[in-house]
Image (cartoon, rainbow, N blue to C red):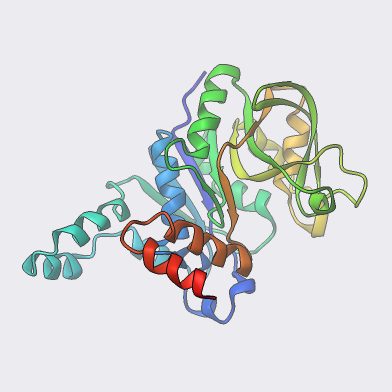
Length: 288
């Protein structure tokens, strides 16, 4: 069983829910406290042993590439002013030479299409997919690390899931579950955004995947699904029964930063964990 060394970050979307801010700033660079969303995803990937980060970008996303580059002028200035704590905080923004790769998605044709755009960089290896606007928070045991443990034990494909309210199942890819062993559930089927009342469970995919390269062959067929887009969940449904497939229920807190309320809540929640600002934030929250 090959180790998971590569991770794909689909970051080509327009971020329309955050306009007008995202007219100039990629959604993935919007900060939660003082780190952009994409940094949290990269940190999670590193904690799981990922060696190569593959960014699927689009027009206007060059700032993401700049973010992970070396900022010589800033670092020189901070060194001269002996602001070593800030310099240390900037270290995670640097990726090693050759560790980052960027490929362009010319049209917004679905998550499956975005992953397929990275096929030549993925090659014949298992790979992870992380959606940066899903901030899955467990700094002691990050989500992808939890999934990697299951992958090493079970092989095949692993997705992260959480239980959602019944009335919200039509918003997600929903697992048709088989046998469960603690936090790990066998996946018998997968339904993308089922109609209200027709979901096979409440286990919803939450933006983290460990996949075998065979799924790329299915995506290459260009089949469209919900919304007229190439859906990753549809391709995953075709490998069920051919390869091991399990769902890992994430132990941690999910912040849906793809919409405004979730993004604000994430900022508040993570700020309250920061000893340098928590007291001020808590006092203000109590005052209102």
